[in-house]
Amino acid sequence: MPLVKPFRGLRPVVGCAADVVAPPYDVVSAAEARKLVQGRPWSFLHISRPEVDLPPGIDPYAPEVYAKAAQNLRRMIAEGVLVREPSECYYVYRLTMGQHVQTGLVAVASVQAYDADRIRKHEFTRPVKEDDRVRQIEALNAQTGPAFLVYRAHAEVDGLLADVAASPAEVDVTARDGVRHQLWTVRDAVQLGYLTAAFDAMEALYVADGHHRSAAASRVAAARRGRDPAATPDASSEYFLSVIFPHDQMQILDYNRLIRDLRGQVPEAFLERVGTRFLVEPSESPVHPAHPAQFGMYLGERWYRLTLEATRVPWDDPVNRLDVSLLANELIQPILGISDSRRDDRIDFVGGIRGLGELERRVDSGDWAVAFSMCATRMEDLMAVADAGEVMPPKSTWFEPKLADGLVSHVLD
Image 1 (cartoon, rainbow, N blue to C red):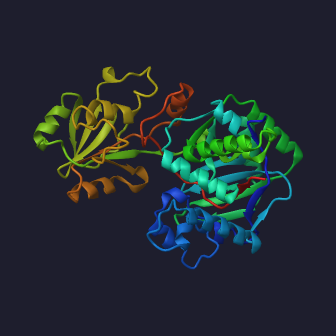
Image 2 (cartoon, helix red, strand yellow; image 1 turned 90 degrees about the vertical axis):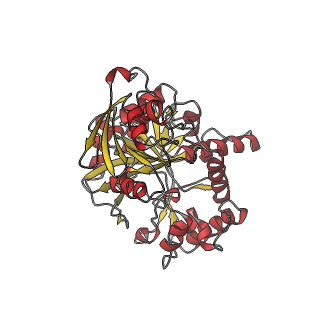
């Protein structure tokens, strides 16, 4: 089966996209979602965060939440707000955030390729979140949140997507966060065939964001195979909704760290211990690390620049050479005593989109003792980890801009 293929997308009817498009379900809280849907009856949050239409405080994993999502999807289809393409298509999707532009392909990707690790992962999933996405897909009989995939830049494919995007967009929406979302439909048989063949010739795709969505799609496909052994390999459930961008257009921001306490150490003793592993230099301004193996540290209303000696970096190890690993292995674990950043509530993570001022604010509040600023993980490093069959430490990447929910969904026939 092909690595990716076109599909009959479920989309907002012409003129309704601005009323429908919503942020991804997992970047807004329930309270934020309730505010965002006020006066917006067609917001896709009624489907992706259906608890907004149920009493406050409801368990987001309660059966009635998934039932409400299905009811809202049926309502939006019945009212003609969402319509399904009459034939299979690809879509070109462009995101613009300030000066940053990235152009990718909306397609459905092969579950078989995902299971065989031709669509490569770099993170573990959490069972509760994976279970949630399985229930959502089954309740809706549709995949409404795309996985965010990456391919190694390919001049001909990139050029074709750019050519399509040179014409006026069918959908052109600027979201509340200022990100512009544009969409074009690819219906030409020659272009469809070329794109399918070009992607099929690629060695691999990579999951950038959406590990829970893709893992859930795999589980749904396996369950449906079990219920219907006669199902064909090209059944719609054997593919999952994806947006696929070239790796050299991706924008990864830093993912910074906060630590609640110094493990009983006074600041002077803590600084002395850090100095046994890092070159420590005071800074008059917030520290944006200039290169890998360098970090900023905010402690006691002062910034410091921490630089790790190059001889301490295992450059041939794709996981342990990452800055997130270096900080954990050289400082957070041995000096601050945090060995499991997935479960330890003494550590928190702040996306670089919030700026270094957010680190200062939270430390100055007294709730956190020290903050660390990081270099952003490079896309090449992410792919190297995935190619090695390894996983990255938690909270290693923060991708911006985010995909929108509601532009295109994948109905399971």
